[in-house]
Length: 144
Image 1 (cartoon, rainbow, N blue to C red):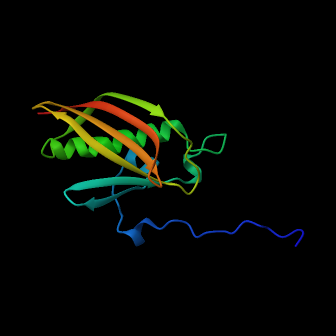
Image 2 (image 1 turned 45 degrees about the vertical axis):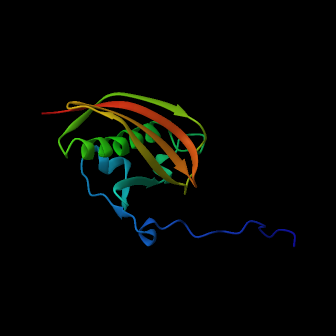
Image 3 (image 1 turned 30 degrees about the horizontal axis):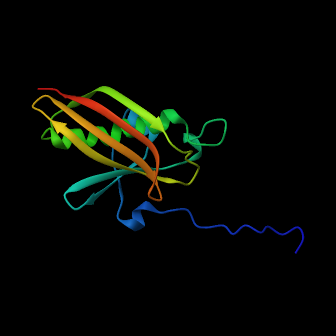
């Protein structure tokens, strides 16, 4: 019929219903989150649900948010690899591959490339519905 919407609305994704838990954090992390975590076999996975506050003026998730999330998610994996010792980001390179929109659930797949005593090299891929939206690689310094 004319004048009626042809789009069907879907319910927003509920991470908690799929086994994800909100990571408690304060400071800067609380401003960009919530960040979600879920144990997947022997590894932890991290994600965030794109909200209005994450958007840029074009209506996509701001690249700075994606880079911040990658730094957090990959950094959490570095922290685990370092035996839960403090780590700081020494270098982080990012390549944007696709836009992320409001309501997208962005997950980070992370790989440890090399772990030495005081330096850890990692790669991460941010994905929405299994499709890459950003690639990142970096170096984390373990603080003794």
